[in-house]
Amino acid sequence: MANHCPVGYFKLHPLVVFAVDQPPLIQAVLKALKVKVIADKAGTSENYPGQYFKKHTGETMQQYIINYKLKLIENRLLNSNMRMAEIANELGFNDESQLNRIFKKYRSMNPSDFRKAGGRLHALV
Image 1 (cartoon, rainbow, N blue to C red):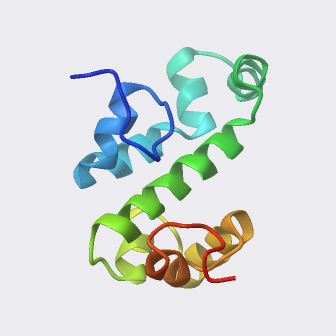
Image 2 (tube, rainbow, N blue to C red):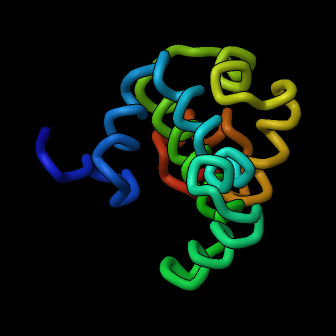
């Protein structure tokens, strides 16, 4: 697999980029990105992976996971006809309103407006 990312994607590990286009893998990747799972696999305390991650990336694991999920949401909004409830379910949100709140908090517009604007943030503001 090529080691490049399509326009608009984070420069992530190739497995993560591949997972964006493979719905059955998304939940496995998101599950694996939980601190407890990583700590258990590495045989460390739950604090160590977070400290290591922050030291080497400059952001917390939680920030990274949120940004990753936001990119997945953007991908679904722009490249599918999925309804918000379907996207929320696929990405492990409690419901559509939680997805809407998170997206609006970090992107300053709701997902429907983002989709209508073709991915141009603030285009409808």
